[in-house]
Each structure stands twice: as structure tokens, then as C-alpha cells.
Image (cartoon, rainbow, N blue to C red; front, side, top):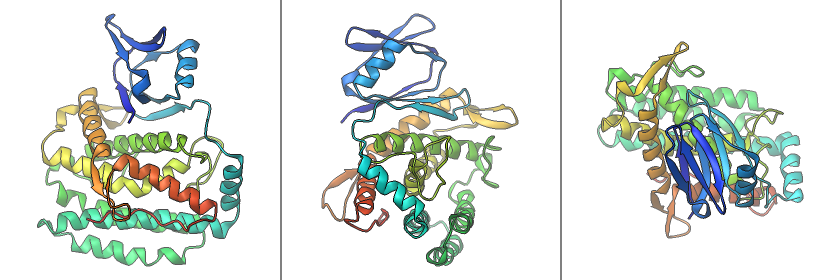
Length: 331
């Protein structure tokens, strides 16, 4: 399986015959095994020329760009080899038809809520008292089937996440990483900085997996389609945030792998420094590569593969072959 490359330093991506290398500010060259690379995540100030982009496109390598603070900026998406006009028409039809759109949107929220409950149950059986939060999520889940528009559905989803985030301080007993409340752009504390960074990584990971399917990332169902951004990756990522991003955060903090010194205060918020991002990315990639026994396939499947499988299930739903049901973790 092709891998992922993260570049945190500043420098320039260059092509040399049939390969790409990164040359840092100090002139140190690092060759990138392009035949074994699926995507590049660029966090530093990196210069790229047309020759490099053409070579990356030919090899179907995706480029994800982040700004100085680790925020996702955009993606260089090579020419889509698998795009299907028929699939795009089906996506658009399911978006325009409110009943069809809401069927999918409700499933995304339900899948996310169920996986939040699974994460809390995991820690609850290990002695952390989370019954109140679990019961609250279970109660709010019952309201999902009755929602007929995305605005009310997103409001329910927001209430579910609030109950879920209320459990974070019990799972991570460290006042230096207290949750308080969810804050974005800028994140007001260290926990929010970790969540925002992790979610950005998951959004781009899901986007890269969409590239390998017939789906169009611009047409989502829970998140409104617009002229500015991809939305389908946001929809699908909702299901996996609790079991990938949040589990990574809990592991990093409970094992003391991320420290207060890994953050810096800028522009009214707190952000991960390069040291913290490097540790987070390593654990994030490790989580994506972790395998679980799939109840239906009866064999081991990685979390990255589960994301792709979720997209295949969505394709079948859009083609009216099989009704979509979100992935729910067994633990």
C-alpha cells in the first residue's frame, strides 16, 4: 500500500528525472519514493514548480497544504481518473431531493453519535464514570430520525457533541488540557488545538480516499454543497472522528506524549508547534494502519481501509444497489 509523506520544514520540491526530492533551507536533499507515495502533506513554506506538479499528477499523488498554524488551506487534486458522470448525476439527484439527502445526512449523524457512545463506553468499562454522558447521547440519538432538514439535524448533532465533549475532562485528568468548551479558529486552549489539528488530518485523509473512488468530493449531504470547498469528506469524516482522532488524542495525553511545551500562543489562540505536530502525525498514521476484525468480511481491515469501504457503501447507495448504513465500532 502506498504511504503518506508529511513535510514540516520549509524548502523546495524539485524533480530529478523520474523522482521527486525535497531540498530544505540548509541544502539538505531528501528523496521521495514517488512510486510508493499516495499523498503529500505540506506544512512548511514549500516552493513548487509546474514540472513537479505535472509529474505528481501523472503519478496520481495528491498535495495537501496547511498554513503556519496547521490549518488546512487546500488541496492540489490531480486529474480524476475514476470520475463517473453517471455517479455525479446520482450524487446531485440525492442532494437535490430533500428526502434522499436527509436519509444520508441522518445516517452520518447517527454513525457519528454511535461511535461517540462506543468511545465513552470503552472508557466507562475501564472505571471512568461516564454513564451520564452516555445516557445523554442515547437520548439525543432518538431525535435523529424525526429531523427533516439539515439545520435541525445539525442542531441535534451539536447537542450530542456537547454531551460527548463534556466527558473529555474525565478521560484526560489533566488541568493543562481541560476542554471547557469547543472553540475553533482560533482554538482557545490546548485540547481544542489538538481536536482541530486532528480533524484537519482526517478531512484530508478522507479526501484522498475519495479520489480513489467514483465519487465527487464537492457534493456532500450533511454539509451543504457550496462553491468554496469539498464537503463529502466532511460528511464521512464525522463517523470516524471519535474512533480515530479522539482516540489518538486520549492516547497522546494519557501517555504524556504531548506536553504544554508543544504549544504556542498566536493571534489569540493556541496552536501546536512542529514538535507537537510531528508526534501527533506519527500516532495518527499509526492509528490509520491499525487493523480490526471486520464482522462482515471476517478478516483484518485497517482504519484507513474502513474509510474507503465507507465510500464504496455510499456508492452502492447512490446507485440504488444497497441501502447505506454507517460503520459503527464494535467496542
